[in-house]
Image (tube, rainbow, N blue to C red; front, side):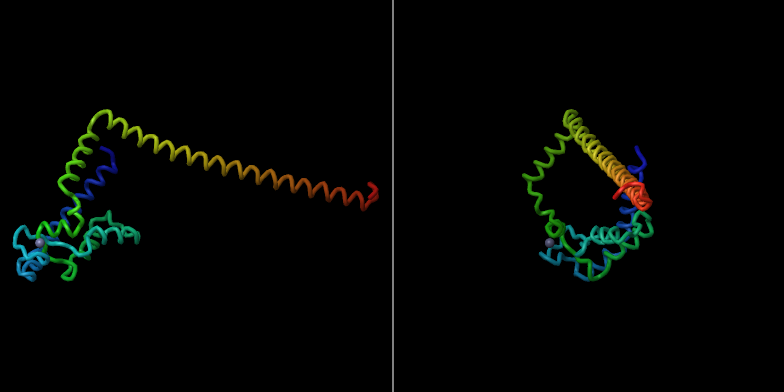
Length: 186
Ligand SMILES: [Zn+2]
């Protein structure tokens, strides 16, 4: 396992722990405010604590603002912003899924996605996907090299031009000097 993978797993673990803590803090408060029923369909089954603006949206905004959310304390501070009375609502599982676009996962789509997932496990497809990644990486590298080379060439040209201009000026100055001394007829 490489380092970034370990960091990612630890970050996910921290996220889950903070989430479960915050859910415990807020669940009963909100459920009781909403009389233990889904605010959309009134169902009393499979109730969930739902966010109007998602935790993810708060995290993305914090990340974009350059906040260090890889620090667990900062992570909790940002996640807490999503947990407040006016951003929390009681929804049943179905309405919650529908709210976050989960409703687009029809049976057919789920089956197709599952098929895709299974295909990705096939050795040949795995090899193909790895190859694609390698090609992408190489392209990025070559592109970077080409960019470095072309700017080096441009720099060289600039230097040659500068040198030539200086030489031209030097010979021009020499010529005018000689003319002034009548060494060369004008
Ligand atoms: Zn509902």
